[in-house]
Image 1 (cartoon, rainbow, N blue to C red):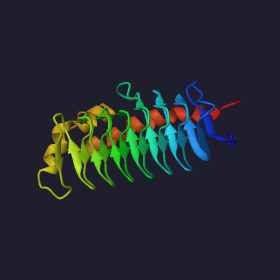
Image 2 (image 1 turned 180 degrees about the horizontal axis):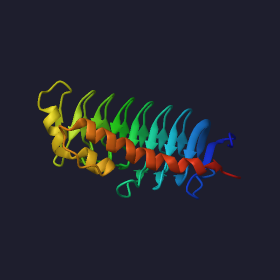
Image 3 (image 1 turned 90 degrees about the vertical axis):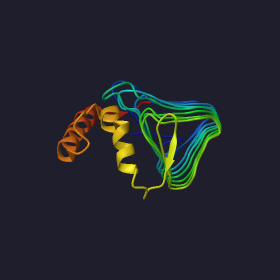
Image 4 (image 1 turned 45 degrees about the vertical axis):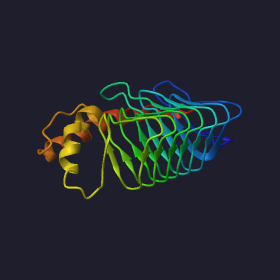
Length: 212
């Protein structure tokens, strides 16, 4: 693995991370597979950008802070992670197979799940969650610790009794893992989810350090 100013870069499924000469990737940040870092982007210490069988695009002057995790997937459909220009991703944020439009701000520990879209100029505040297939309009604000769900979007507090039913209606397991087991049959659903990830992550056995 290379740990010079372009970070730890790993070839995965034949794809090698590409870093623009004006970008900065910290020595302990990890780029896996088809990851494309744009001009003047900054990827800070401990961040992990894993393209899996899809790809990750980081736009110009976009910042990915410490220990953030960006993961694309092709386990059920092509689910890239796309960050447009001037996006800020805070420490410990998690972005999975989603799209974030320009000038958006994702705060510390924010999460955006598969096939969600964050509109331009939006804010996902500290520890807020944008659930799968949710669409945030431009300049939308998700308050701290809140859940944003659906299209059109609705906001729910974590303790709201409507949360379990609302999440169940989203079909998260089908979107993220192609699993259609009943929401109430958690053992079967979680077993199948684990099997999907075991198969997807098993491809890493052939990873190797990226040259150059």
